[in-house]
Amino acid sequence: MRPRTLVLFILSLSIPAGCDTSRSVEAFRRPDREDRATQLRPTPDIGAQLATLIVLPSLGGGPAEALAVNNAGTAIAGYGNERARGQTTLRAVRWTLQPNGSWAIVALPLAANSTGAKAAGINRVGDAAGVSYPGTSPHAALWPAAGGITLLGCGDLGAGNAISANAQVVVGVQTVPQPAIAAVWRPGVCRENLPPLASGDWARADAVNGDGTIVGGSGAASPTGNGLPVRWKQIAGAWQIEQLDQRRGDVRSANTIGDLAGGVYVPCALADGCQRGAIWYAGGGSRELGTLGGDHSWIRGINSAAEVVGLSTLTGGTNTAYFWSGSLGMIQLPTGRAQWAAANAVSDVRPDGTRLVVGTDARGRPIAWIVQSP
Image (cartoon, rainbow, N blue to C red; front, side, top):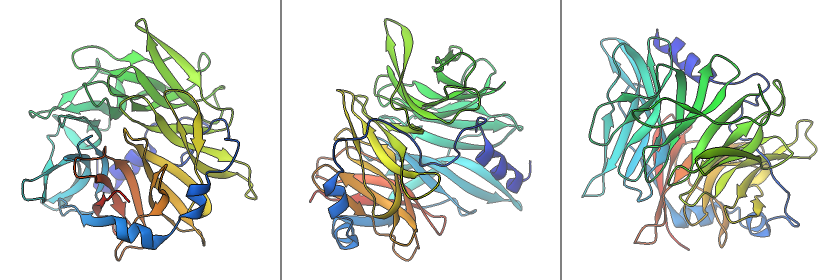
């Protein structure tokens, strides 16, 4: 497959009929009052004081993106484009923190006959998970920290979207045949299907907790319906599904204990509604975030302190990256010379009081921020 065709194929992978294709969706009970800390602190100056922007090394063949970071903030997973012999190949990559504080990048192995791969999750020890494209068929894949690649399942087609922090439990979506099925893969066994909201309806899994017993994602209540945020729990060996909100939306991230994060659509002056970042706590209850002054916000990552990262629109409509905590509220992360940036994942708070946020920017560079405690 030619490189440009491959990129278009990846972007269109596993979008069920009727599913909102935006990265910023989701839903749950609206809180009694707006998150005022988020509303009052969208100040770029605070972000510049608390966050240091880092440009990660790339493979040198084109756009790259850091999609996931481990709990300790020492290993990052994502993708890059590698150019060799006049061709560009999409490669799953892993960045590792070096003793001198720099970052080293490694292109992860390709499966036999593979035309490309992308890593979307990483656990504590550095095992990465994602999708491999042998020929034109996507397969959920695992790259153990010790080396090599394992195609998961029993020949089924799908994509891994996340991996549990403390194990090799990979969650994602089985894409063929349709409708899409939310799935769980473990090395050496066949795929487990997660139940949909209703028989015959589509679902996808995008997040998993530390031990692989709580999964977050989205599903439809009808074959052509909008995605709704859902949670699966494994109880006595069986998976049970719970709808988290009546509004359209989805879950995009989970922390070790099973707090889930993503976004919801709320009524506003826009015909299609406005998106808001949302957190669903493992112990019960939820929180809905504000924005950096524009119409929309959504969450892409959550850590064990229930701090989150994602994107928000500014006044004027440009999307950019933010970091949010319960004490600090939402702060805009610095972008350097780039017009905007995306924050995809956040580590736990490290012994020195910092956490690592990872993402990409408008220049197609893989980037990270070191965020200090206030």
